[in-house]
Length: 338
Length: 131
Image (cartoon, rainbow over all chains, first blue to last red; front, side, top):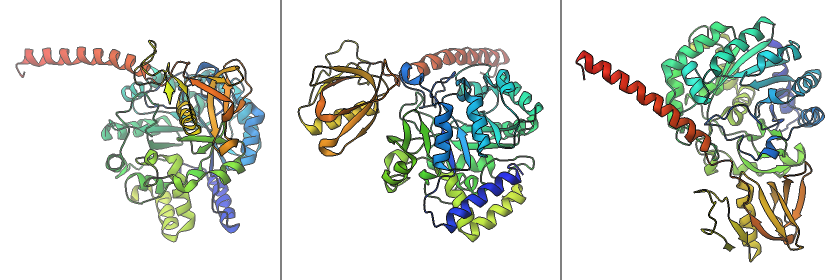
């Protein structure tokens, strides 16, 4: 089982509490972006194109902790930019852990090994290492040779110290299913707790606009990769989301499930679209016209199947329908039954 | 609306970089602000008071006469709020950071490496008599 029981229980309890309280829209994962600066310039990334004085801005630890309290989500994912560039990242993480939030520190791992001493192993902290495939594919995706080897070394070091480690993979149109299956084998052999996969989103500002996945192609690709999973593979995400990627379930986007807070404020409506910013989480929830977003409703969302929009939909399905709950239990207990 | 389209020698192809908008109506102003909001570089906003602000426009709220935008000045960490009715011109003065130059540079390097590989394979295939 990729996700520890305590984490599954926390999330289940949180979701059921929202349901009992008849809360229609609730956050599941806070996407906390303490800075946009990165030490890579990946071709598929639309997050880092800003003037230097904006890239130099950082959220303070206090702002990060306050955002997590304000939002209340049980899980905090820290993407960026590259979060480990932030000099106070260990303090930010330790404060979030003290709030008993499950923290996923998303990193390209270039700085990870040399900064490991700053982090205490905890069931609440997971290093989510960005890995886009085997060496050739990964170095190509991140536009720098040698990064794969650095990341593998950092993963080994973190595991040796008792940290939770997962991988986080974004797939593009040119992904080779057989190579991806070998990549999953390689990651599990490394000893990571689980893997996360998602199709890339076609950021308007990303340099490479040719390789983002269209919906049909996404379903075809993920079916070929995940249709007959190997026994040892563990995924650190909802099995129903993987079903969705393979076209076996249909979901509408749940953009409020993964709200984003960064140096500009609370981003409307989601991690991927910038339609403006709210000063408070409450303002975000109340002033965003949620019905304007999602596939079929907004051309910017046409081909999006990204986890930040649909993983929460899958979790909602798990706790909102008997078929969803049953299938989740079945796939959790027996992942190869797919 | 009046702008300096085609007048700037430094303008990046396909980018708003170098353009200056002088809106003649609220609708034109709102349109120019939307373009600036979508722009990934600094803009220079000249106010009717004669003052001028350079920075990154990160937010705007359109609400009739109360409409305003928010800007991170390039020389300060404190966001500035500017009402639409204070604005005279909006110039796209900062470098457009989303022009994709880094990708093009990288891809040209990799293409040359791939070409060399193809030539090696082709030479090998010819030597084996299969090409």
